[in-house]
Image 1: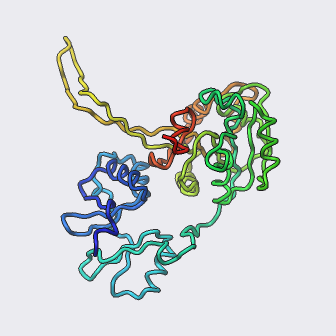
Image 2: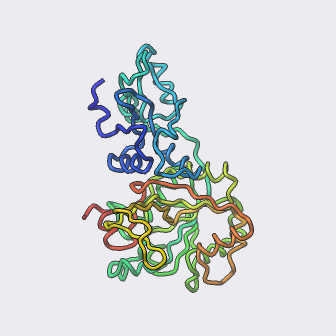
Length: 352
């Protein structure tokens, strides 16, 4: 097999999960081919890494520690229709084809065999979506002096439309939109679109924080629901987040982004009398960062005080304090694009 068809997508058993995730981000792929010397060991997917993070496995651990040896592959002596059937059943964008020795002989890609047909055949979900669109967007001034942040353009759409289209794509139809700053402009714009979204607007009479206005929906929402801010785009299929939320019996799920920071200096720790204890050269720290997207069970609405300024962080602590389950679903850095500040916005629209 020519290595050209998997160029840039090869990793090893000893590579760390963090480096594998970075490689996926750099190549803009969701699957890597794992080798030991010249022997094919299997494939590693972004889903494998996400499940490892959820299990609290360190991203410093090697790929070999989580490699699934039971994945389904195609074989050179297998008829074409059988392999295609596997791809359809698994919704596999990539299908390795192995020879009789278990070595990689070929790779089939979805778009080569199902041209024009999306691999996504998953069942749709129809959960309510609350969009928090009442902020002033002060970090994006002066543009937000003229138009509200939800209507800032990203390509040929506003960021608000991009976010709602993503939710509609997985089956969500009903939107509730919290408005405050320049609310009339947002309502007017959405009301004159050719595409008509099913939106119920509700307004904060005064700023109520990052989640306080959701209390106004008490009695309107009686099922689990999404909450999303309106200044970032996440390419994660939110059905994966919903599956995790249900299977983990969470009261609340936070979508997080795995973010690494490399300190460009030697980091020193000292002890008594200022004596050196450790010296680490240019260490890298990895964190899970809040992306501003959540799934909440309807009971969480009752825990938001009426008419008070209340942040999502306060709700999280309140749920935890009563013994509730607050889960975190991680996505890679390349999946999440933020436009909260000018540098991030310019990157989002490919200016920088």
